[in-house]
Image (cartoon, rainbow, N blue to C red; front, side, top):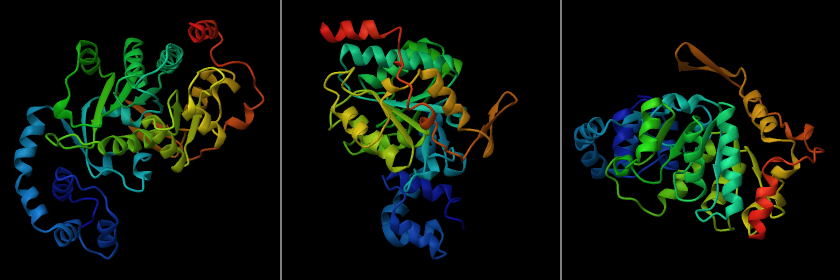
Length: 326
């Protein structure tokens, strides 16, 4: 049996918190099935987990959760060295196959950082691109809320299971209209642990070709996401301290060569380049007769913009300067 096709074993492994490990991959490479490899490595733990699958499936159905396996993941997500075995979803799963931009940052943003986050989210929504973030307090929540209020599309990747999800009216309305997707790697009922959040961050980084780090310290979870995106060879853009004070994370990314947003013409140029880089590798069906062409070519569009010194948010800069001096 192909390692990628044994859904029962994938569910069993995932339900006890086991993802793709080096040992599992080695077993598959040697011609063993995923079930055989899992039983050799984890023994009674897997037998017990498999017995619980009917109960898990009942819970999933009761809570109206969709289960996604690797064959239905977007190709970008499968580029992770250790992609999820299973994802649990609530909402519009076709958003996974639309071009998007990940936006991450601190849980305690300054007024200026919050203005930048709202401005970017609104512009991305207007361009029909998907925003991706982590549904935490601060920058994440600002991004999701502004996107939804702007009638745009957003993906919220949670560091906890969907069984713990309680959404307010704004997001319930977005679920009803297909404007949001909640995503988690954790099976319903799994208790939340601290290490689940870095796990969540790698998914945020992998879902898009572009990550925008808005604001945060050197210990920021958003910076972890940005560095994971860099490790995947994706583009990362940030805002350095010349506009946002106390943005050590942004400064560290600039020192690694990440472009500073203030060097570029405007976000619309940036977003159009995101769309352009998603052309003609393969087709993904979006529903309603609409197809999206996805491109493997990642030619850097930064080169054509590096000399542009016009600021990215000309209509917002006075507000930002006022916020800094407040």
